[in-house]
Length: 338
Image (tube, rainbow, N blue to C red; front, side):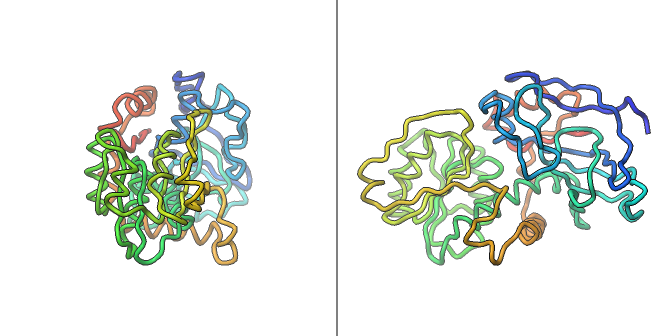
């Protein structure tokens, strides 16, 4: 294997992306080398890093071996890589060679990994579909944490990739009403296609009032827009004794939040949700292995094609981040190809 043919995406500073040479590695005795086929850009957490909207001392993700540092520049960040095992260490079973695998790894053309950190892509799943695994698992986690009950009314605020996947999963449940709140027409159309009963444009009307008119207040509001100002609308749209699940990570973005009479007298609960952990109330029955098996099954049942809107060669990675930032109405999942 060549030692100079690799490439990696690196954030140099806010909105400053470079594609740097990468030495193609040899495997450790207990590890493998993966040659990346495609990787998915996260329009949530990853764009926060791109824009510089995170504290530089924030740990990237303690639960993932490939993301064990802080988010201070320069940094390589990403967590949705699909590739082929091209080399195996002396102590690794030969069966690993040539397997197609998913890894929570930054955007790199080649990388080392321990087999236990890899997820073998199921037969019949394409690399592009597999690149959305992390997003599907996040949506599964939101559905588990929100725990909507039979006949409940639910609103999902934000219809990016994760929001649309969450809407699609929830549409399979026997809810009374499922509302998608999203400013961009293209995404609202997809939300309806993926199972939303109603859609609301928050730029054309008061989102909370519109949701309340459609539902008489929701039992569960899921906030995944990535915009802190949306949280207030989610709270206002929630009925007495309802639940607000915050799946967004706002980073260092700040907005005032009014928690007035409606919240105070309404006994509304607000809870964060993050895919790195399992809800404590579920840990007796659910662990990461079960959740990931569920995510793979759901991934195979969902129509993911419409979510992938752009494919960009890794050499032009900077243009991919600009596309996500400047053209959100026409951009959802951007894939880097190698």
